[in-house]
Length: 304
Image (cartoon, rainbow, N blue to C red; front, side, top):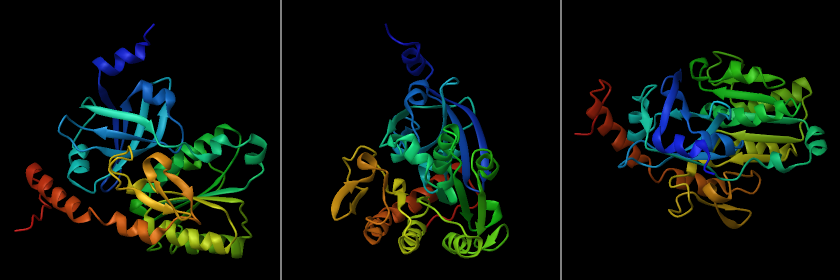
């Protein structure tokens, strides 16, 4: 017997249920995708396509609700496709919403008693707060309280702080300009927490900009804290076929989309990953300008 979810996905497509602006250039959407919601696990991602000619956009799952059949994504406008997506509103539909893809967080495969015995801290940089949230929420449902450190350039760019406070143990804030919380980088905030407040941890999970994860992993190695990082920002195709997310981990070639996106931070070749991440920046910038012009956005600065 074919499940009702099969017919929902065929005839309703992937309807946008809600949309919220979290910060300038960052928005959150709940998407009607019952089959994805029923199978999703923390750490996984989806591939989104707005229409039949649209670009494939890999997005980490921020949350999911099996009862409502919805999956939450958080998107930052960085190119033409994400700008176009930002113009969609509740009631609009997406052509494709494929997932869940990638490997779930390693925590899900650990024995409960081993996991419960660990003191865990999450370091979330900018948009990385979104994929951190489902992991912290999952731990909360297991009765485990993890600490979370959220960082951004300024207070206006902090996202999901209140949601995180409901599921985390302690929540620490760091801003580059000192407009909220600790004044400085997230690595300095962690060092301060350990040196001055006596914090100690058995596991760190770091998700954010690649450069942040590199220096956070260097610090946690010095502090002897095992660290997991997420290389979701490298993904393009999401199936391992394009090779854009190829990275060296422990001297072996891995693909972020099929082998990850989470890896041992001490084993990742971050310099290689940083070089790979810049490969499409010029193209993304050009497409963003073109889409701004097409939409008549006043900030458009198309190259002459």
